[in-house]
Image (cartoon, rainbow, N blue to C red; front, side):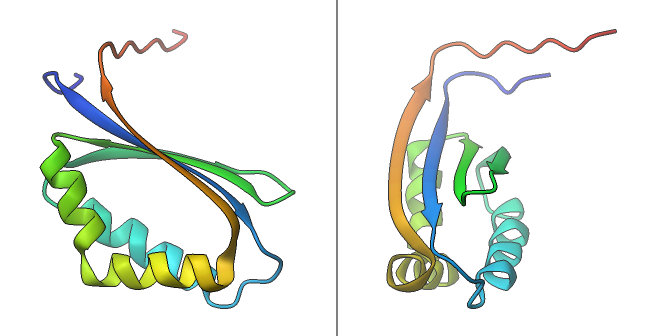
Length: 105
């Protein structure tokens, strides 16, 4: 059952640079860390063969998003992302007005 509204999404679009350079290990730590974070609901993430990735994370409040942004290990990941792992980043935070789900029986 979807959470009560309002909820918020963070849409993170990125273009990776070549090579891993520690990205995989940090990405795994971020997945594990955010899952324990207050207000985090869920996320969906994809990356194609060119390195273009889209992650959508779902949150209870803007304060919860701000607290995750300020998390020390997440700040390290943000810094390294800009220094080493990403060519381009586009970040959007939006309020969810409607959320519908359907699954084929």
